[in-house]
Amino acid sequence: MGKVCRLEINGNAISARRGDLLLDAALLNGIEIPYDCRSGLCGTCRVRVLDGRVFGGKADAETVYACQSRIVSDLRIDVEDVPETVTLPGVVADLTPLAADTCEVCIEVPEWPEYIPGQYYSVQFRGFPARYFSPTAPLDWPYDETLMRFHVTRLPNGRVSSALGKRIRAGHRVKLEGPFGSAYLRPFHGQRLVLVASGSGFAPIWSIAEAAIKMEPRREIVLIVSSRRVASLYMVPALCRLALFPNVTIIPVTSEAQDVTAAVRGGKPTDHLPALTPHDIIFAAGAPEMVRAVAQIAADAGAECYSDPFEVASHRTAADLWSRAADWIANKPLVSRPMSQRRQAAAQYAGT
Image (cartoon, rainbow, N blue to C red; front, side, top):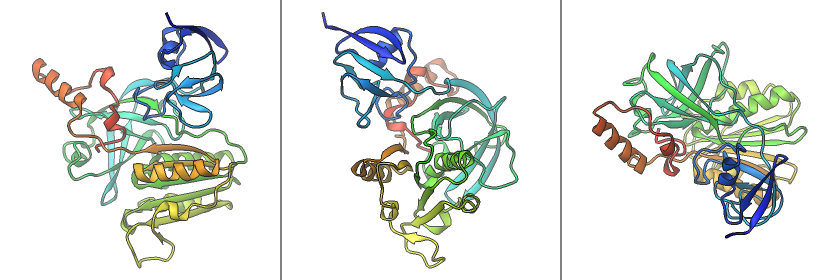
C-alpha cells in the first residue's frame, strides 16, 4: 500500500495516497477543484502549491495542473475561488460580420451567468459539435447589454463557423456550459498589464482590458493586437475607446506588408513586446505558436503569464466518431455529447 499523505486544500485537511492524482484526491474527498479537459491543456484546474511536492503537471514556478499532478508528499494547496460551472439554454439573437474572416455571434440567455473576464464557455449550436469561445465586451456603443457576445473566426472548412449565417441563423437554439479556464483577470493592483492577441483571441483580451481599465482608469496597459492583414483588424472601435485612457499603449500589427497606414506595424506580436520585468502581468490569447512564444519571453523575464492558445479542432476526433455512431444507433439527430467527451484535447478552441 502506498504512503498516506496529508493534504490541506484551502484550509481543509484530507488524506490521500502517494501517487494519486491531486484532482482525483480532492474530488473523492468532497473538495471542489474546477476542471474541464483533464489533459492539462485548458488550465481550469490550475492550483498554487504553497508547501510540498507533486510530480508532473507543472504550470509555472508556483502552480500546477491538478489533473496532471501526482501527490509525492504532504501538500498545502490554494485553489482560487471561481464561478460555479453551469449549463444554460440560449438562442442566437444576431450575427454581425466584423471582418471577412470574423463574425460576432450574439446569444440571448435567460440571465447572464457569472464569469470572470478571460474565461470561456462551451457553446453548442443545436445539431453541431460544441466549440469553445470567450464572452467579450461590446466593441462600440450603442449595444444591447443583455446579450452574450462571442467572436468567431470563419474557417473555410469549419463545421461550425462555415454554417454561421447559413444553417445557423437568428433563432437557432444554443446550449452553453461554463465558465472554464484559468487565463482570467485577477486584481493585480498597480501592476502593468501586457495584453497580446491574435485574430479572435482579441475576444478574451478585450474583455480583460475593459474590466481592468474600469477597475483602475489610470492603470498602465500595453495592448498588442495582430492579424494577417489590415482588413482583419476588426477591433478598431474598441481600440479607439481604450486609447482615451492616459496610460494605455496600443500596438496593432500585421504579418503581411501594407501601405494603408503608418499606425499599423509589421512583423510578429513578439517583435513589439516592451521590455518585460518580474512586476509585469502578461495575458496572451490566439494562435498557439504566438501564445507559446509570448509565454516563453515572459518566463525568461520572470513575469507572470496567463495564456489561452486557440487550438483548431480535429474534424475526426474520437469523440466525434463516437458521437456520430451513438446518434446513428439511436436514430436521432445530433445533440449534445456525454459529459465525459467534452473538451477533447485536440479541440480546445475551435474547429470553428
